Image (cartoon, rainbow, N blue to C red):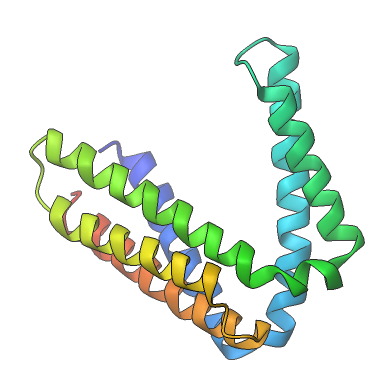
Length: 168
């Protein structure tokens, strides 16, 4: 694995752990910060895709860009509404992350690299936790934030472990 890419992935995993600790430590404040951060991130992501659509790089970039920019603006304008369905969104994030890890594990399997089974199991666990959060959000945003924080700590820690031990 290229050193620069590995360094970026290690920093990302450490960021997951740090964010997870913040979510567990102060879930009330975390909700407001996440709404703002997600809003800004979604607007930026949407604008990037809209710019890519102007360059003709990929089909569907404009639609994806407009949807993300609109969702980001919605998060910034009405964070209270977002908080009410945040457990649902967090469940979707865990599902997507789980699917990504499952795909990475299958790629590692094809390349016959070690560690793919552990990554596959973790991806399946994240997928299951996301589905659980999606369909049973525990009835409280605060509890969901703590739960999601704990999942991020586990996800980041395992990513760090994987990157430091398997991908040398």
